[in-house]
Length: 439
Picture 1: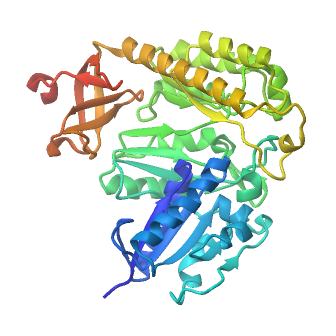
Picture 2 (picture 1 turned 180 degrees about the vertical axis):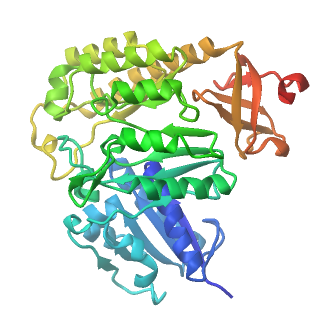
Picture 3 (picture 1 turned 90 degrees about the horizontal axis):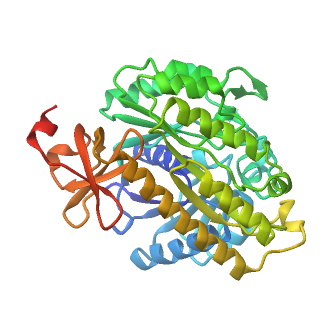
C-alpha cells in the first residue's frame, strides 16, 4: 500500500501553485495525496510569513495535524521555514524544516518517516535560491495559478519576502507557453499568473532577458484558454502598453490587483515604495478610461510606524474618492530584520485595529457599489465546483462573484447569465433562465 501525503497551504496564490507542484513530486515518487483529515503518513505545511498571524497559524495547523494523525511525519516549507527554521524546529511534532532552496527536493530529503526527538533542518542562505522552479496548481480549482516569477529585488522597508525567497528570477517565455498549453489541454479554462513581483518578469541569471509585456502578448495567442488573469502587479510596473493591450485582448480579463499600501506620500516614502500616489491615480484613470467595468483591487497597510491620524485620514479619503472595487487590508506587524521594525513612532495596536476596521467597512461599500454598477448586465460566468448551502459560485470576467443553485452540469462551464440582484451575503444572484443559459 502506498504511503499517504496531505498538504496545507498558508498565504498567497504563489504558495498554492508551489504546493500543487510539490504534490506532483510526491505522486511521481509513489505516494497517494489525500485530504488533511484522512490520517496521512506525511504532512507538508507550506507557510507564509507576511504577518505574525501567519506564524501563529502554522503552529495551529501542526497541532491539528497531529490530533488527526499522531504518528505522521510533519515537514514545514515556505517563507516562514526560510526565515525562522530554528523557531519552527521547536514546535512540538515538527520533523523537518526545508528552506527556499531545498523545498523542491523534498522527496529526496524524506527518506525515512521515523519521527525523531529533534527536527531536521535543511536551510541554506536564501542567496543560494538562484534557480527558478516553475509550478502551477492543478486538480483542486477551476482556475489554475501559474507561477512565472519568483523572488524580489525591491527593498520595501516592511517586507521580508526578499529574505525568504531571494532575488528576482523568472521562467522563460517559451516554457510558460508550453505549460499554458498543457493546462489548456487539461480542460482548465482560466489561468491566473502569479509571482512575488510579477511585473518584474524577465530576469534570469541576474540579467533582464524579457519584459512582462512580452509574456502577456505571447500568452494571448495560446489556444484553448478562455481567460488569463493577472494576480497582482506593482503600479510602477503596470505600464500604459499593458493596460491598452488587456483592454483589447482576446483572453486577458478586465481585472487588476494593484498594491497601493498607503495613500500618504509621506508614508510611501517611509515604506520605500517606488511611486507616489499621483502615479497610482493615473493608473486607475487609464484603466477606467479604457475599461469602465474593470475590477480594481487594492492592497493597503494600516498602522505603519509614523502613520499619524492625519496620514491615515489622508489614505482613507484618497481611497474613498478613488474608483476602485475592493481593498485587501493588512494591519502592519513588526518583522525582524526589516528597516520598518527599527523605526520609531510605533502605532498602538488598538489604533491599528480601529483603522483596519474603518478600511474593511470602506472595502465592503466599494465592493457593493461595484456590484451594483454591474446589475442588469449580461455577463459570462465561469462556475466552480464548490457547494455551500445548496448553492455554487462563479466569477465574471471582471471578478463579480455570482451564486446560483448547485448544478453539477455547470461545474467548469462558461455560461452567459443576467446579473439580477445582490443577495444578503453580498454575492450577485443571476437569472436562471433557459434562454440565458442556452446562449
